[in-house]
Image (cartoon, rainbow, N blue to C red; front, side):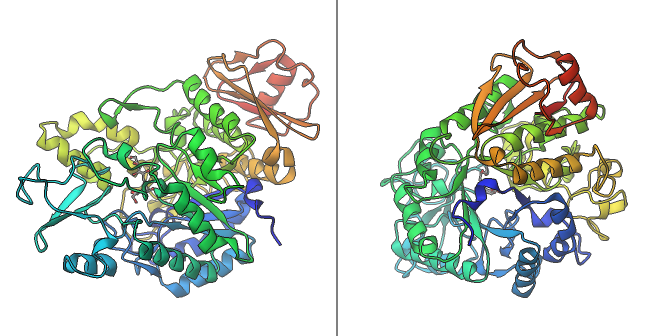
Length: 558
Ligand code: ISL
């Protein structure tokens, strides 16, 4: 049987199915498309697939709005194809983690339809219904129960004419928030989770799970800070662990998506002795560039700021709890465009170096589809290029405020979630081998150079570098379990750290600049004859070992 903490030596690969591969020619990725590309996953060597939502959904937020948790949306396939996928992955020794979206449902979920039907419905209390603000008429501006703003622009409350009350939606108006105070809600969620475990899935990635415990009374103020890491959060997670996972004969992986979480809270969420979740996705490093005007108002981030943040999480969770490690996902810009250098001269080197750092840190690394190919952001040009509800709502809201699209373009290009959602580039063919039809979102024109076909088995490719790093983790326990020592933390361009386990040591040296850099004195003492575990190139390894120099954007793991 698997040890309970099997995930500490695992690498997880995230599939955003809509953009992964289209198996039926309708221009939208689907489960058949995933089944068609299992060789790619096996070649890469990943242990786990995290599948973004494929449940039945009106697709207002690409499946993060679920109308039936126990069915597959026809756009992606069917329960039969899902069973086929689970079996096929297991046949290759790959586990499957489903996305669990239970902070909210779709407004088209029967639970919400029932809740909405009448103030005395049995399920009225399953969601957050509130009367208009005192002295106001429902539906008029300012009549919302609180002044909260939704994540996707506009008020977090939607007025329902039929019953004269508002419902809460932290995300789109088609994503009403479930009321976790009601034990029936929690029991229904747990029952649904058990149903999926019995079907063979190996765990869950829990969407915005740290927003489910709302405060006792809802009052004016910043919405996010009012609801994040709420009063009953630890209680709910411990209850879920007991009700769903604890007595199960199989071992699972649970990862909570927890925006805004700090190190101390994350330690509590992931402390094995408390029995809550195995690890969380923290947001500090991806929230660094946010300006005073919100997500799309960008401020520059330096490498030392990025390093300080991630290394603080490394040491903060060194003795208790566990880190998940990620550069990007379906909500974030492409890693190489954001943290590396996507100029054609530096793209491959910097993509590989980002991987060298992430995959030799302590924690469970996550690879977002296409990251292993060095895929880049797309320079969106017109409104018609965008698909994401967050971006589109932002543009609409700003337009009302008199801000034109041209002014918003730089921010959108930098951080629109659509950057991560362009189709995976399988080949140089039109449609990038993603689809034979008309893709639902534009293919990046650089698929002619950047694609899987051009990289599989090609020494020095970004893909083969990822493959080497995955293998390193499997072969050397120090990568998975070793302690971590930050090094040269005052260097402006060098990211360095050591790992150690039972006398086996590892040294990661990574350059975050185009210029060659001279390694600080003493750093290589005792390391000059060490074996090269992984490097971005043989020149890079030679430069370090013979000259004490790290070439531009290269990295070496000794
Ligand atoms: O994407 C973000 C920043 O622009 C986050 O605020 C994001 O909305 C937040 O991390 C929650 O994300 C998750 O829940 C959302 C869904 O849209 C995202 O795709 C999902 O990852 C609502 O279900």
